[in-house]
Length: 262
Ligand code: ATR
Image (cartoon, rainbow, N blue to C red; front, top):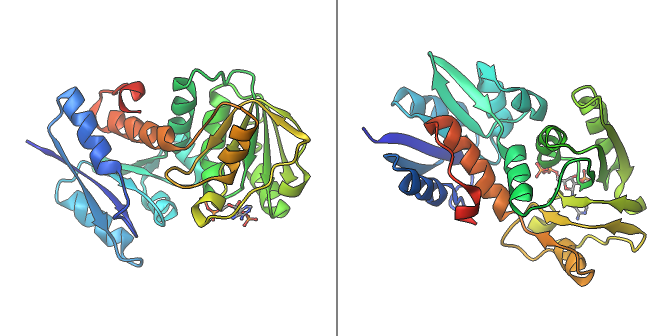
């Protein structure tokens, strides 16, 4: 029987998840259908429950419902608990399970480029949900120092406060976006600046060796600066594919190769 999957969000038209999951299915020989569901802003819970009541197998969750999905789950993975957001849902033994595959998607994308995360020093720009979701997986992949830089310093400090127990063996600190300096192996742009078309200005005193922009398909002043400095850099398409692969493998028990879909 064809297994039913969906991605739920609002808006949802822009989502590339159906094409990715259908491509994974074709490669791995899984019989599935994966559709987009537009939920009303006040209707996430009932829409998600209806989907599983009608034998839906798994559901991805996107903006703005990831925190509501987290709250709805009966069981959560460790990384979803730390992220406080869920992008992957499934039913097991009558219970709703939730995971967050965004961070592992980023890690897999970085590793697929051959960039070494072991013992790395990472500067993450931004202190919103996107940053929260990736810290624990980056630490699990071997990061030894992470600095969170945010326009609003208090928000970065709060995030460090929230997360420091989960990653107690590494150095995790906060700084202000306008006081950047030092040397990092990676700078990851997790601000929404590229989504809104705003420029980010990185000072010359900031030295870094790889640049990862989480957004994709948008002009990025962050990537422009990395390219001017001739630093290896990429947009967030690999992370998108990586999070989808991770969800696919949870649901279907088979893991497509990231490099086949980049
Ligand atoms: P997400 O869930 O995608 O992380 P979010 O929670 O709205 O979205 O967070 C957006 C992040 O981008 C925040 O860190 C925000 O900084 P503030 O906390 O100071 O608002 C950051 N951001 C958005 N626009 C920015 C800009 N033009 N320059 C710098 N940082 C920006």
